[in-house]
Length: 343
Image: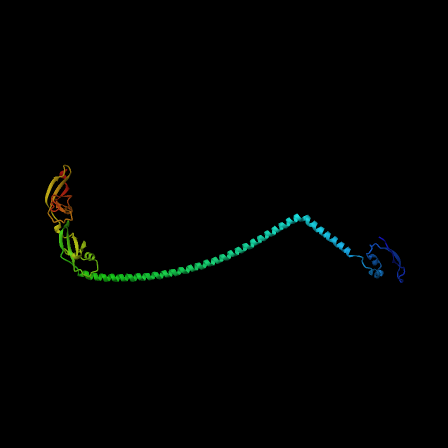
């Protein structure tokens, strides 16, 4: 590179303070390349600035394009080197970051979803409780209305039962009064006298007279409740028979004041000791004849016939024997009494 020798002034100090400084020319070597202004010289030659400013730079579009290409290549190479060198690790880091972000996103979504679900559950629980409260209130109201209705029904039922009972009582009273009036007009015909039914018992019968044609009551009941006078006493029938057109018949079995049904013992006989050393003696009596109904057995009359002998009273014999027939009984009673002479 050619060097240019130029003369630049140099300032020399003066010993006197009144006169201006003097300067000498100094050679300056230009180190700048061709086409580039010598800035150093311009700085050292301020008085020559007008001449330097008039010079134009020697840069061309080719130089600029070359510089731009170099810069672009450098940047591209640096970026490629950077990305190619760290690509696997960068991809893993990016993937992990994406996974982490996705996980966080899912967790956030789960949290939001869980919070929404919990919120909906709380709202549904509140609505359910409100609904249950309303249902319970309706049930309570319905129960109160039902109880009130049942109470009114029970009151009406009680009133109806009371009215029905009162009506029945009045009707029964009316019927009783009417029946009493009818019964007052009823009476028994002459009693028929039958045979002895048992000891001191005799059968009687009769027909009920003056039964009204419009009588609506029970004829058997009227018969059973109408008494007849027997031996001075009022006695109701033991049973009744409704024979239709033949009338209502009443039957009695009178067990008092019937001397004809109390046969007596006669023909006292001592049959001696029952056996040697037995200490018992047998006494025999004959039961006098009496009229006996066919419906009863002679044994019942015999066993209930009392006797008095040897200074003692006996309610009846120990056993009875009939040496006749049922139509014409010939009854004997036997007693076995203690006797020391038979020992």
